[in-house]
Image 1 (cartoon, rainbow, N blue to C red):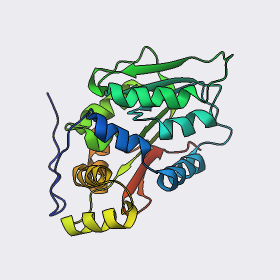
Image 2: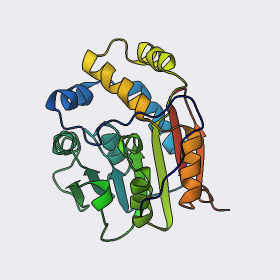
Image 3: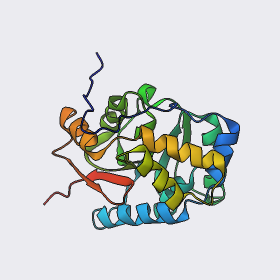
Image 4: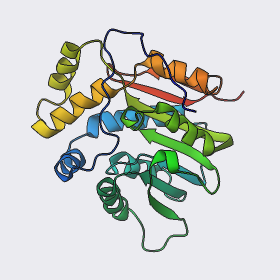
Length: 236
């Protein structure tokens, strides 16, 4: 039975968008967009929150998309075994190309690209690091995301999740587009706008974590006017 959350914290009601990006024009626009500033910032936040001397042997990238964040993640842990998962074949193909340019000819680590819906993903074994950027807001049932995370971890896994945060109003959403995507294509602007409207607010994510009982294991915090991050608490 699916669980549900009454997302009534704010006047700005969530407007879901399609779960998969499969329009070639949309995918091409997204893959060629300049996310350097935002993604570099998110990776720095990720690095700042990692345990000291953390060297994962296995890494899962949930919703890898066209691979910009994935390539940054791989560059940080080039000796680890990686699983890149996405439900869109177009996205996965872009990710393969990006990661392919980074792979040495001789390597001992295992790299997997899985075209699979997150609700169908059952890992063969758990991962040391579970990473996800901008996947949760695509899902109509957010608990499918958290269930996949829980299926993929062991006691000492490190979890890092980042995503967009729904603004207070349609006007605020338009202001964010103007501030951060004004020079981008109309396709990308529309996609960004729809993603903002589909995003979960931080209060909603907090309630999800409480329901799935991850609130005692994960920190949750806003880091910009449009992003939040969620990551494993350090053991003392």
